[in-house]
Image: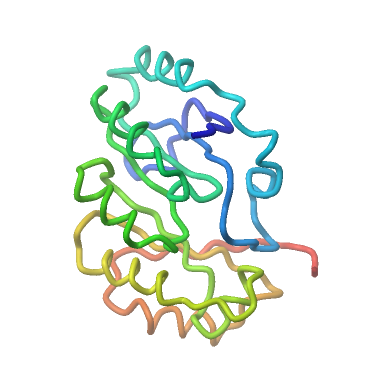
Length: 197
């Protein structure tokens, strides 16, 4: 798999943990407000960090860092993500996965293998406006709904988070998200000022 970057320390991304963040490239969504758009649209330039270099860094930080965050792009698009996570787990790290929730089967597989410890799932908008918000008109939200339902069942510690963008989110959309995720433990709403597209 292609590793596009490494943030060597974060005290914010993994709740109550000192961690680093690994960035993967590629995504199946096209959100106009994406904060990591270069990882989505310039995948040919990705793969700048060799896995051997990453593992050497993680080996040196054992006992200093508690966890590793895997983000993107959408990490679950990579078929060999399992192999990387297994190597990280062998070093004793906790793993947090950031996902858009579009691959519920892969999410469950990684959890069942014991390769992830915490999930942060992006909820892009109310279901009725999902396609518009992710740049894919008519998008079928059933996969995202499956992932959310599975997390709500309590299989892993998790959080849902939504980036609020003036052009895409109204007060009623936030209410609909709340109704959809009724019973959730953690939902984070972040505001973002963006240009109109």
